[in-house]
Image 1: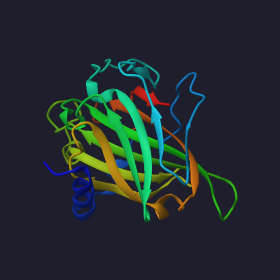
Image 2 (image 1 turned 120 degrees about the vertical axis):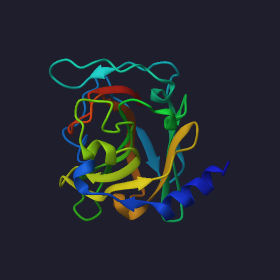
Image 3 (image 1 turned 30 degrees about the horizontal axis):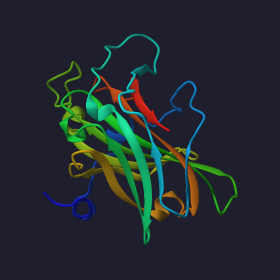
Length: 220
């Protein structure tokens, strides 16, 4: 079993781009979580936030009805951390289960980054998303090639201010057994010396595009 650092190096080496249309889901309007008022802070030093175990609660994000996804241990955030080594940020979400065990739906782990642009001196927002899909084109009503192509892990970096991808959907290897972890080069998010952040786990219950149906957990 390779160490986490080895997994990250391998991930960078073998990451490959996929068609842009596959990754457009889940990057629309900000999600709605009532009562979330705190954020984590990275200020040019290692940062960590904690979250309670066993607090996963599916919160529906759309109008209408959808099946409620079964709560799994890999939906439960235990904490998140940011470390910078050289010119690379290491973004880690600690979980109560193995995120590679996802065998239904589409699970997304998202970092919401808020910083100040050194160029415009205005607020800048990014979403870093790690997406794992179990859709195979045969376990849902939307039987198409896109759902097959989305299987496995992908990551993106999205600029919310201008509404475009900085890093388009990119295929990456499996995650470690108890966390979602991946290195991101600092210039993709404006090379900030400080930023505020929060993380969430969300689920889409079918293979159609659009926002995730449910927020399962978030931190802080």
